[in-house]
Amino acid sequence: MATEWSGQQGYVLTLMLFLWSAVGGRTETGTVAAAGGGGGAGGGTHVLGMRLEKSDKPSGTTDGGVIQVTEESTVQLRFYGVHFHSDTWTQIRFTELASDEEEEDEEAKEGGASSFSSSSRDDMSRRRMMMLDPANRTCADFTKDISVGTFMNVSGRGTTGVVSVNVKPLRKSEPRKEYALCVRSVDGSRWVLVGDSDGRFLVVEEKKSLLPVWFKCVLLCFLLCLSGMFSGLNLGLMALDPMELRIVQSCGTEREKKYARKIEPIRSQGNYLLCSLLLGNVLVNTTLTILLDGLIGSGLGAVAASTVGIVIFGEIVPQALCSRHGLAVGANTIVLTKLFMLLTFPLSFPVSKLLDVLLGQEIGTVYNREKLVEMLKVTEPYNDLVREEMNMIQGALELRTKTVEDVMTPLADCFVLAADAVLDFDTMSEVMESGYTRIPVHDGERSNIVDVLYVKDLAFVDPDDCTTLKTITKFYNHPVHFVFHDTKLDAMLEEFKKGVCVCVGVGVWVGGWHGRLLGGV
Image (cartoon, rainbow, N blue to C red; front, top):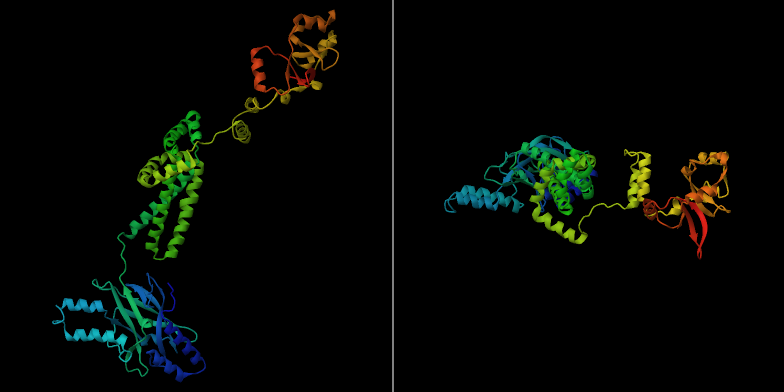
């Protein structure tokens, strides 16, 4: 994990040394290197400091600019200075620094200041003074806890180089340990410390997880399944309308009736179910991301991995499945749904009641006549209704909205007979060919309907007798009923049920009834 420069002083010194080295300023470079407190023998190499490049375990830089890594890790450190080469790693060592807390612990272990050995106390004090007194920065010994790699990857200008460093585990009694960078002096006679924060190296104890890796992997798979279940049920169950569930319980298949009976009790509490599923989904997804962060060790990697996993296995796949088989999936997971509704009751139930107050109780989808007719038309390719049944259902639903004018036969298209017509062979043949059983009879004008002829009345009429039509109609005297053009069809249906209306003339009222016939029903 790359970090920023660990100290403004090292950055400024590196920039100055690079510029002077580019124009051949060896004398100035040596002066600045000496001022920085570090140097090395061989080819004018000077090491000024270091910064963290990357690590295979959690690492970073403290607010004070000190590099912080985890025990038992392999760290890439970038050193900066001038005149670096591939063997510059031989001029780099680390020494251990004792903290104030360690000194106090040592004194306590030895029985206090009176019994604490003078040599140990002097050694710790000297290590502390090395960081405080620039004139006394000599490294007396080196630590074996940090081993430097045997190769330095040097940049093109020789001002920086990357070295691999292996950090060994800390002792059980040490939660953290601080080290300092040591480099050879200018004359090569001694090892000296480099800088303050630029040369310090802090090793902290690795945070051990209480759960083994295999258990975390199993838990991840389980959480991913739960995420998919909550997401799928959220779509599948909430898409099931309460009214539709009641319909399925009445006229579905035996399996559908069984599923609907299981789901209907919890689906009737829509807001409570919704809050429980959403709360479970959010809780599982958050836990999944945190668990991945502990496994991967990178926040960005955990976010990326959890996003991909949740989108594919927690959203797309379960929602695609439940959108088509929501009834079956919801019924088979009803136990888990009820269990989680019980677990989230303290939070989800009050929120659901608040939603009931604010939004009202869920009623379900209710279809009016227009919607029912349109639904039948839209689903016609997929249902098993024949065309005649569709027409009958549609006509029955439109009885209260349509008038007789909408369904009447215009008078111009009606087959009518004149009252003075003679029922000879030609006339009776024309009646039979018309195909109607009731025929209006007019007197004079075509719109003046006075009688109605039933075809069955001609059963005993001989065409050779040339009987007049008026004789037959007067004999049977079938009534003719007239209605207004805006009469609703349901009212007309009731009249037909009474059996008193056989043929109807449809007219208009214009300042009084004028018998202006528009058509027949």
